Image (cartoon, rainbow, N blue to C red; front, side):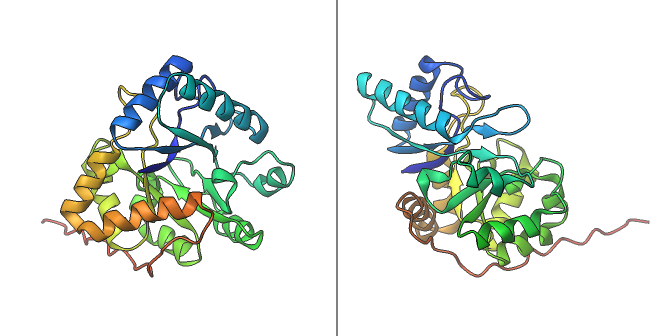
Length: 253
């Protein structure tokens, strides 16, 4: 199994605090059946993780994994919070795509989707990159107005749902929206977004068990294969998205 979203690099964001914590996370990942992880440290107002420093940290962690005899491979990635100059920073060599592929993570603020999003995601695609919107199921505006996400996916953006969301660890509302996104072909990856082994751990095995039970084995294969295709820098499998129908609210008199 491949995890394409994880905060396992030591001491650079709100994930693993030090190398010991990184190795603890790595052991937990291997227990879940994960053999490769894309390390995706934050790039936002709080954490300034640029491409070259990420590559150094990835190399350092892989060395430590080897020395500790942990059978896990860490690959470079990044989780940039959406900002208007992201393509300028990409040109300057500061943005790290997922395993140096054409796939680029984009994180929205948790409360809303910025007005310039559609134009920026279009420009990213014109550049030959494919944006992957991370954890859309936890975005307040998208939960309230699912047509906004449909419009972005229909225009070529991909999305990634968090394993813990699907398992209900962020609450029932987020779990239900995650299920709706899968039903509507509006998500293409399931990943951990793990930060530690205490309250933000992997839950990948649990999520795939749930997926198998709810949707069947074909969906398990689809999401696992898409992660493999991504790290191989190939085109992923995507079905035609459909709109999520909002339930009508009835007023009681």
